Length: 220
Image (cartoon, rainbow, N blue to C red; front, side):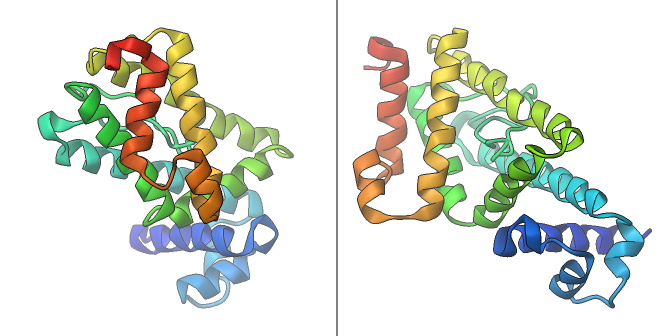
């Protein structure tokens, strides 16, 4: 099969999920979003479950690419490839072998960048991933597919804490991961009063304060 067309259809499935929700994900809607002849999506992904699987896999690929790009751009190579807050949402990819952020400041900058992407360029991907999580509540096979993606965030954040020279016990990695995941719906909604109350109106400050809270005096 044509890989470029396959990827175009997978991207279209993500766009449909983000725009229409799970109920709107049909082969016809994907064909329309991809601007391909009717029936094309069904040739590549014969069932709706196949469409859901394709969208989930594409979300994970996109998040890996984002984390690696941020790692390359960060001072000292920032974070390892595939580092956290995917919520899997992101799509929480698994850990790689990079050196990681050199200190708390670099880690805070990396995390702020990931959250900033959630509210900006990555918004479509994250909305689609949340729809996939809702679908997974009713489809055990999809839950099994998403589970290692989301669970990997916890290990990835532990790695980042260690690389930055911060305490990285399981309880701290859990607190950091859950706080970041909890921020995502507010960023997607973008309600000004809520963002201000949560401290999410300044993401650089938010991630610095979050690390200080999670790691206590070690980051002060």
